[in-house]
Image 1 (tube, rainbow, N blue to C red):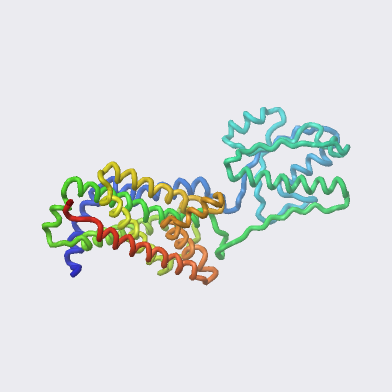
Image 2 (image 1 turned 135 degrees about the horizontal axis):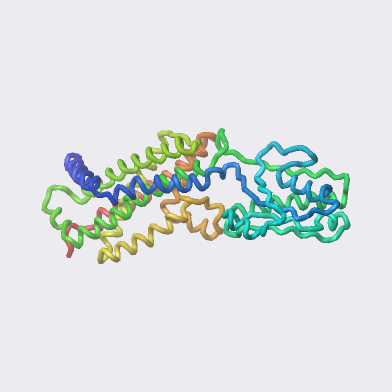
Length: 383
């Protein structure tokens, strides 16, 4: 019979030892906070998709007021003398015509810029080909925003050339998920909660189980009344507590530090419990089946790192290639992060908790299978 008293006793002993472990506390609580502060600061303005763009107008010819100036105004969101009052993606910074543009971008740590060349207006009016120079970094998401906006304005000016009476109208719409416009930080919080649910129990249990086996501590534990299942349950309970603490800290930093808009609901409890159960058991399974501590560490990293970066923890899956999005669906962490997003961001508005139920079901099945395998396969004594 499973004894709650023995589980509680082992939980207290393990908890006291863990609290003395500064490395464990750092990766369990402090490290996720560092990540949310770092990523939150970097992407704090990403909700409006505004990009600072440096523009150098080298056209000072007699027709510049007719073409080049209106083009710059269009880049700034002004059409036919009317400022666009929606969410305009570009924020212009003017660069003097006598500056070395490439060096200017480098000095301002920017990769996004536009050069309007000399004779731009005269060539446009004469019907000659005109070529803008658009600077950007292909690896940056802002590059696509700049090039897409510029392409739209170019299309409008080309239309005006062929039909001077045409009205050039460029609009920008923004989709909202919650009652307030969602921000990067709103999706980062569930991702980092999933990250902390994965990292602490997974790495700790891989190392603990491998070290205990090497040092014959499991053999010594076999001489005590505690059973293998009780020992494993006490570890799951500890990491459930640690996940709750990390959850509270991350949510507090996100809301009070970056103004995140997320929903706190009882639907979070299954993820905060089933997640540590699954990864604690998985770490135990990897550690006990490995032949050495070094092998256990390698296998743990091979399993963990793809989940860290391919489960939507830091970046949305939508920006990834199709084959990686497909691969993500076989990763257990994907269902934790997706489920947390469903209950914290999406479902509160739509009222549809069915996707969250599916995620809970998948995690529950995986957690039970891995827990049973871990409890059955690891041994107090090596053969």
